[in-house]
Length: 199
Image 1 (cartoon, rainbow, N blue to C red):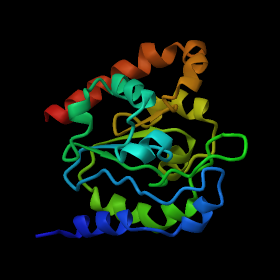
Image 2 (tube, rainbow, N blue to C red; image 1 turned 90 degrees about the horizontal axis):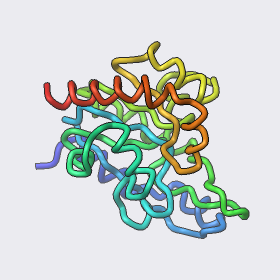
Image 3 (cartoon, rainbow, N blue to C red; image 1 turned 120 degrees about the vertical axis):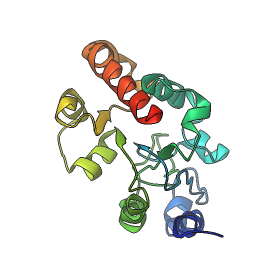
C-alpha cells in the first residue's frame, strides 16, 4: 500500500508546471523530475538542479560531480543511491536547460515553492543535511552570503548541517585556493556521515 510520501513522489514525478519554460530554452526539452527520497532517509543532500546527464539517466549525480561528491562524503555509490539512507533533494527536480551560450540556467523558484516544504515534512528523520551550492544554502539556511563565506563558516552549522561548494570540475581552482576545505571540513563531514549511517 502506498503511503503519503509515495503519493508525493508520484505527484512530483508527474509535475509539468515548467513545461512551457523548458520548451523555450536552448535545449527545448520536456520536464523529467528526478525524485530520489524516502521518508526513512537519515542524510539529506540538497543540491541545485539536475544537469543534462542526470536528465538523461533519471538518477541524481550520475556524472563526474557525483563522483567528487561521493568522495567528499566518504561513501560508495551503493550507499549514496540507497534512498532509505540518503535523500537527494535539489531546489528544482528538473533539468532547467541551457541558455543561448550553453550555460546552465538557474533552478526555477516555482519548483521549490511548490514542492520543497512538503518534501522536508516527509523527511523528518534527517539527521544530517549537506547543502550543495548557493541555492540550497539560501533556502535551508536563509543566508545570502557568497558560497565561500558560508562554507568557510561551516562550524556554525555542524554537526547537523554542512554547506559545500558545488562539486563541479569548474570549482577545481576554488578547491586549490581554499585548502582548508579538504584539510578541515571534509574529515569532519566524513566522520559525521559515518556516525549517522552507523547509528
